Every structure is written in structure tokens, then in C-alpha cells.
Length: 230
Image (cartoon, rainbow, N blue to C red; front, side, top):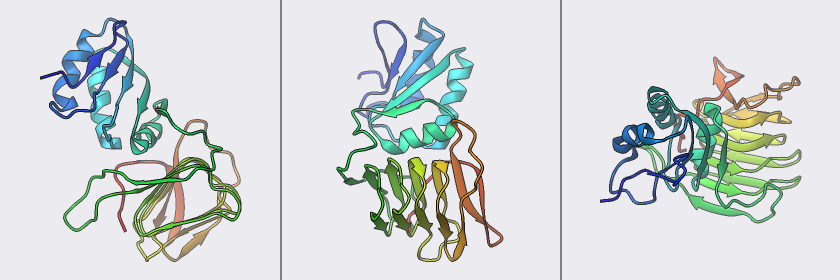
């Protein structure tokens, strides 16, 4: 049985292969210890890592005395989680943000028996006049420009800038969130609450989230723990 994590010949890249013969948590410690450099890059392949998974992984990285330089993944949700954690990350073999090609697919997700699985993934920037709606949570790899609208019964996560209109919890969920690398929308809506985006510039590299607190929409540093599926 192959190791779940491989090192490249330079000893700098820790790679999680596509197969699931061995869980990455069972191999990460030994293989990080075997790395011959202080800084490592992580190739997650097809693994879906949540914010919590990355917290666990970073504990192993710290304990090994290594430093994680960057992360690449085939799964957009993993890239978003890494960005929210403050890790430099990119999607492998991705389309550029300016692409007009739209791709939708179902992503794996943490779920309970009362929740449907899957997240709608949209690749490409939404421009003025575009409208994207789903009964599930939506993950967008690109920007949402002024004049574009996104509506979801669950959460909305944007790996890019939100400058248009976003409505999370469209069916009334007050637990829904809107997360983006930069939250400067024309309008935010969560359930029935409405707010405008902040005027001040965000902190560089800090993902932000909008959530509903006592009937008021607040913007805080993002925590990509799991999706809510409407």
C-alpha cells in the first residue's frame, strides 16, 4: 500500500495522492519529519480539507518544526478553507478569474443525516446582469462584480471579491453566512436582514464573513468550518 503522502525528490513538497488507501492524518507526521527542508509546500490533490482539517494539519506542521509555504488543490473548497486560514493557496489547473466559462459541479461536504450533501461550485467571474441562484450553498471561484447577484438558501463563499449583491439564507435561514476574500458589496442580505457593505478597505490577505447577530448583519474574520446546505 502506497503512502498517503509523498515527498518530491527535493524533499520540499508533501503530496496527498488521489487514492484513499491511507488517510493523510495517519501519515502526515512521519513524512513531515522526513522532509529535509524547513519550508514545505502541500499538494492536497483531490482531498477536501475543511478549516478544521487545516487546523489539525497545521498542528502537525508546527510540531515537526516545519513551515507551510503554500498549498495547491484540485478542490475549490479546500483552497477557500486555506485562504480563510491565512495560507497561500491556489487551485490547480484552474481557469483564470476573467473566464466567461461557467462550470457547475457537486462538491463533497461534511453533513449530518438531516442535511443534503453537495455544494454548487461556479467557476468564472459574475458580471453585471448575471444572476446565480441555488437551493444549496454556493462556492464561487472568481469575483462577483457590481450589477451581479448571487442567491442561496445556504451559505455563499466567494474566492474573490464580492462587489455585487449577495443573499444567503434566502429561504429564511438566520444561520447562513456570506464569506469572501474581500466583502465590499452593493448589498448584503441574510434571511430577511439587509445591509450595505463597509466603506473601509479590508486587511490584506484576510478573508471576511458576514453573519446575522441579533438581527443585525456583522462582518468579521472568516471561519470556513463547514457549509450550510439549504
